[in-house]
Image 1 (cartoon, rainbow, N blue to C red):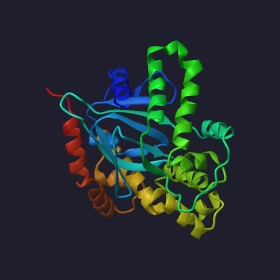
Image 2: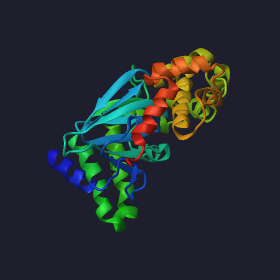
Image 3: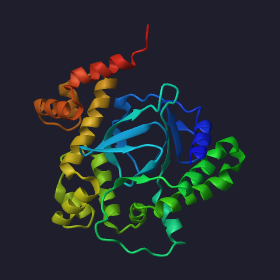
Image 4: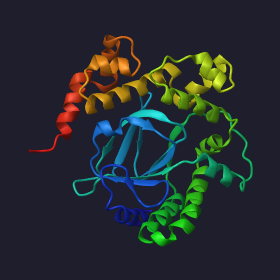
Length: 296
C-alpha cells in the first residue's frame, strides 16, 4: 500500500491548507498546517482518508485518531473539533474526502444482496482499517486529476467502487442505513437537519420525535446511539461552534454573540464556551485573530 500512498501524495501535492477542489465531483483535498479553529465545525457525511500525517477528531468528548492505515466514515452531520499532525518536517499532512450522497449509495445497494442488521450496530461515525482494495479505488479516482477528460465517464464508476469497498468494511452498515429512508439513522438525520437550521431556537423534543415518527423515549434512545449526545448537547455544540466563528469574524462582544446563537444567559454562555474550547470567549477569539493576522 505504501507505493499507492506515495503516488496519491504526488497527485495531491498542489492542495492548499483548506478544502481544495480536485475537479472531481464530491472529492476535496487538503494539505499542510490547518488552524485548530478551522477544524471546529459541523462535519457532513463523508469518507475521509489520510495520505500523510494524522488527524484527531473529538466528538462528544471522545477522540477519534486516524492516519494512512485507517479511514473515517461519517454518516450524519455532527459537530466536532479536531487537530492534524504533520508526518515530519518535510512531510505535511494530506487528506482527501468523498462526500456521501444517499441516492448514490441507494443505487449501488440495488445491485447488492440484502444484508441483515446485526445487533449492536449503532453510531453515526467510526474509524475503520484501510484495505489495499479501498486504497486502490481511491488511487484510480485521484489519477483522474491528470486526465480530466475522463472524469465524466469514470468518476462515477470509481466513486461506486469506493462506496462498495466501504460497504464491505466493518462500518458498511452505516452506508446502508443512510440510504434506507425508514432506518433509524435516516430518521435521526431529519432531526439533526432541523437542529442545524434552527440552532438558535429552543429544542422541543416532542416536536423532533414527531418529525422522526418516533415516540419521545425511542427518539432519545436512537439520537444518543447515533450521535453519542442528547439533542440538547448536540444543539449546544452547534451553538458554540457558530459563536466562535462569529467572535472571530465580527466585532460584537461575547454577550451579543451569546444571544444571537440562542443563549438566554451570557454568563452561562461564557462558562460553557470556556469548558468546550478551553478559554473564555473574548480571549479565545483574540488568540485566534492574533494567530491568523498577516505578518507586517
